[in-house]
Image 1: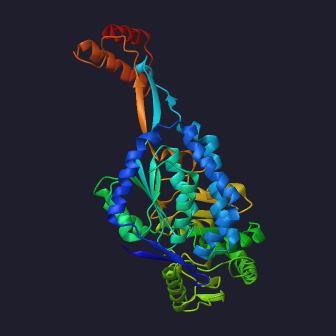
Image 2: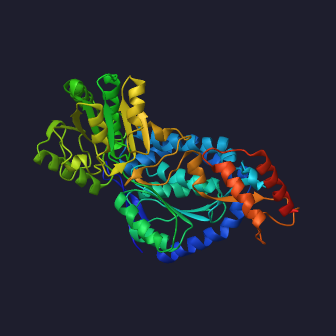
Image 3: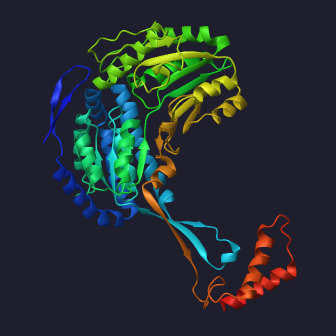
Length: 510
């Protein structure tokens, strides 16, 4: 059995050790989850939501303590933990309390006239056991929100937190125990890759993964052997487009926050900034001044904390070195201690799409800036990426901003704001291209943890249907007439032909 060391990346303090789950423990957890599923899924929705309400109350009452523990595990400032881990999770719970009933209730849908007198509806049924494999950058909310979504929909959950931030995994496990979920309804499995592989091999009914594209592909490949549906929330290389008519002060503030919040370890970070040529020099100076004013430290009185994962810090250093070697200019920052976890916020100019910094996910506090000369060029540059998670467009011309936004190859887009789409629980969230598969949050996200059952109901009083045996010439004549009348180019409504078809319809069903 492996052991995970819990360590504060900002201070190096050892927070303890945590045993990894063994393959047998994963298997037994799956058995408990399957045993718990019938009882949990049979609970009326208000009773399931009652557990979520209790969790919301705990988040509110313990907000500062929980934020402190998350900060100690990740190196992020306490305020960021409060805003992005606790607040968003509690807000999502409130959203489900208000709207889950409407989103999960059966829906009547129209039935074509030719199927009269049948009635049609859609029912949303839970899948079974959902495996949630979560990341280290927002280890609390990116674990708890998908887990609660699955639970609200009636599933049981096996949660594997990231091995990079095991302390938060322990915090969540203790929190779920405090809430008093029924035995087997939600279980936390600590560990690394081997535990994740064992979890997939245990054949859950759905896998929800948040993390890198490389790991997402590996999970999808393993899941394909068992035809397990997967939802993948993967990386991004998100573009920000600033037109000359934008509110430049606001856009510069957003660029600095969007690039450096959580030390740049955000899948929706502003990782590529494109500025219209006429305001490019002015905008670069604004960004430099605002970057210079940032405070870096831990855990309070700071704007930027440390990196969380040493391997990711190495990637950031490599991307910056590659850019400099290929001609990029460091406008500010670039001070990266070889072994340190505090990487200074860095602004680069003179960058091109031949550099890693503009092609690969950096996931660190670096902001590369390019200029563009036309709307078409801005769209082309923004779409020139294997990723498509989030984007932002900055202009006070509403028509232009919307026109550009809807031409971007992305799952989410903000106009005159950035990253904020995730903060609205009514909106679905997810990416295109290598940024993932599927959506969560919003009605689509809750229903993603269900399977839709279509029901069509006939009164059952007639002896047969018009499409049943025996086939007759009258049936053929009737359907030829219906096809021409309903779907033809001119849709000629021949009264006599339709009456004849209707009489034949009634006769065949009697």
